[in-house]
Image (cartoon, rainbow, N blue to C red; front, side):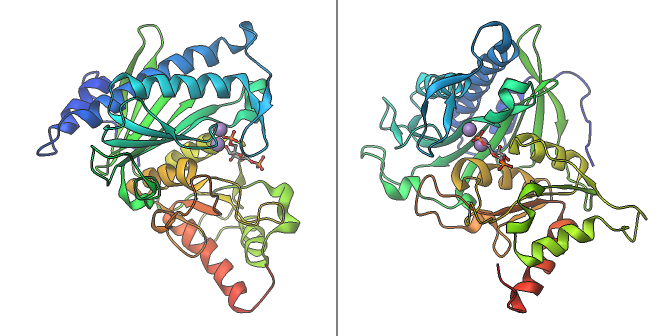
Length: 343
Ligand code: AHG
Ligand code: MN
Ligand code: MN
């Protein structure tokens, strides 16, 4: 359940500083980094809101490393994030969905590595449906005098220092966690300030929404097919079948799941045998948020956060949401896998 403990308006900046005071020895660098991300979010939000009138819609003309058409807004958001992260010399490396290789920042002695999906849900830009930005922050392991190396970049999600997202929806919200619960802020566009709107969000233990691209049904594992079929029959508690919801922007589907409960799945399919969603800048930060809210995020067998990455752009199947729903889905998938049913 969402606890609304907002007696007076608390800004993102105030909240970050208050949280920083809970960490002994904090230098304020992470706080500054989060504030920089907040600034980039406001600039992207402004651009998203006037996208239709500034001719920014449509293809930029190039393809990204995944062979996808890049939209102008993807490029814009990527640039804003890079500018924001270079402001305070705290980030030594940025890894983005839109950049083939990790981008070294001017300050190679910076303490943090930031992973980002600058614009999630690009196929929804042209149709005015919610999109977002997702970020994940790690502390480098190497000495600050050295150049960052692979051990700095390929850390498991358990080592995230912070993770979060911005959702450009009917309002713009920013959610983040540093491992002390999940806080959500809503942008007041008239004064350009994020205010705390929900603190310590807890995901419902069980929910009655399922969220998956059912167009790929025939290419799923038998276990997953049977699980989704079971969502369509009467639930023993509510007496009703689940409702289907699929926006096609992971960040928006996950935000709804966080607030309303249920399950979001992007599984292995014939076209995407390792799933489609990227571990480092889509799955890890959203798994961190969902776990901090009392939910679960797995690849069907293992916690997302425990996956040891070997490549910055690798993808993974993902199931996340209310713990009871995720456990139930895993039960189906494991049962059929044990029976040796293909897929
Ligand atoms: P991106 O726009 O960053 O490439 O991400 C799109 C992703 C994700 O947001 C969404 O959940 C998924 O693509 C939708 O994919 P399908 O169209 O295959 O369902
Ligand atoms: Mn994405
Ligand atoms: Mn993207």
